[in-house]
Length: 375
Image 1: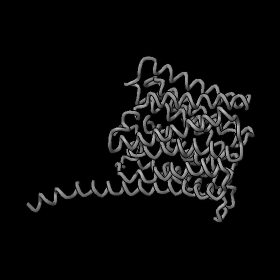
Image 2 (image 1 turned 90 degrees about the vertical axis):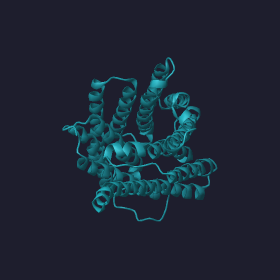
Image 3 (image 1 turned 180 degrees about the vertical axis):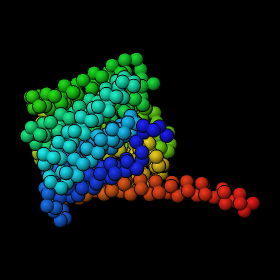
Image 4 (image 1 turned 135 degrees about the vertical axis):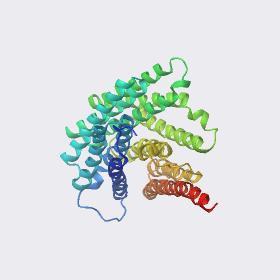
């Protein structure tokens, strides 16, 4: 093992903090859906979005990048985002929680700077752009902007990060000028999200165009177009990716066509198209690849991983197309509950797959010596 690498025992508390942000964020979702669940002392529903995007997704991204860098100081980035999520749970949208989340983004940018020194690449530039968007979101939040007003920045964080990772995988098979078109799409997205803070109406339209440009590039160039015809894990990943791109494209259409929105059914639809349909789908299908690298424990693909993925997309379709578009509160509420159950179901499936793989590995390690002794 590299002596400068981060020990697994140090990674586990950080991952636990991210998991805690996920679970409390899902609980906040139940509060926002109006279910009769006990309300905590802190206004948890006010920090649902930052908890899910920065406390959970941000911690996962920062932890994975810290492990990739291999420097122990880099663990401070996910540690700060995990601690920031905990502060939001305990105190609501407090200054402490927001400052910790901002510190995490600054440290993540420092990680990308070190990775860039190793090997500059457009994919890394896109991911660093995502971290910069995270920083801008927390800066605006500290400046007094409401969470609905910083949603485009939060969306840019996840979109740029994931698009950069997909570019990294596709670069060997890219056509001529493929990277240039990617950078053009990314530049449109950044121009749009920057304009939302300066000219909210025009900026929202441009931001939607930027999302559509990124989606178009992904649909044309991502290897998922070919691997969806494969089997096993490659097909599972491709199905989740293509479904996520479809939802992100719909969100881009809503922003590009209808402009800014900060409340009401269209806000609910746009928000969850990006952070459930796109982001959570990406997490579902990348978990069998990323979590083993982070935890050094296998998370093998199993066909039943399709079940929570299917529930996620089915309940989101009902929520957006019936609950939000047609204005049916009961359908909106219970499909929202279905979204929560899909995420919890995936966590349960992942834990079951990892435990099964651990038991199998233990048997293959222990049995041969016993057999040899009997012989």
